[in-house]
Amino acid sequence: MDDTPSLFPELRQAPAVTEPVGLQYAENAVSPQARDSLVRRFQTLAFAPFDFRGFKGNRRTVAFGSRYDFTHNRVDRADPLPEWLEPLRAAAAAFADIAPADLTQALVTEYAPGAGIGWHRDRPEYGKVVGLSFGSACVLRFRRPTDEGWRRASRPLPPGSAYLLDGPAREAWQHSIAPGDQLRYSVTFRTLRPRAG
Image (cartoon, rainbow, N blue to C red; front, top):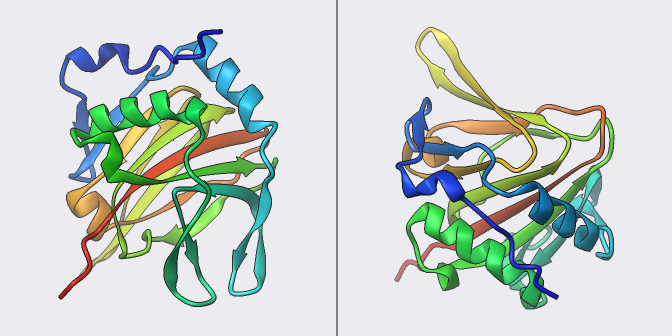
């Protein structure tokens, strides 16, 4: 059977660039047929509650390639990327203009109704971040401190959309996911920064 997603059809043109600088966004990046196929795959995964130093989050995750151990503050190996995720990684890499092998982590996240993510920046061990949204829509929020207070921005993420965090969007801005009222999945691919020294 051919499960190869038909991805990023509009990216033959330049992706949209918006605030914050370094955020790139593509709507309808994953076809409805590929979305349905991937969601069926997600539903077979062995999700575990997100664990932040003993605190169990209200979302569940499965990591491939690498995983971040918040208890020991380090990147650990995880199970290899499954074959059915390889076409999605290749498309995400093309969107980010990097080699697929550079996307060393794939984190699949399941958001139950009411689940979101608080304000944060991704761990500094990771570099570029490419996210893809499945299931229900959500809002990706951004904020950064200024002399006048927080500067804010947001980007709706409908099913099938994709975004890239790079540059200031990755380094200077925090981001969060507002809690939704329906089941949602995401796949987040990350590059690993070279170790210093």
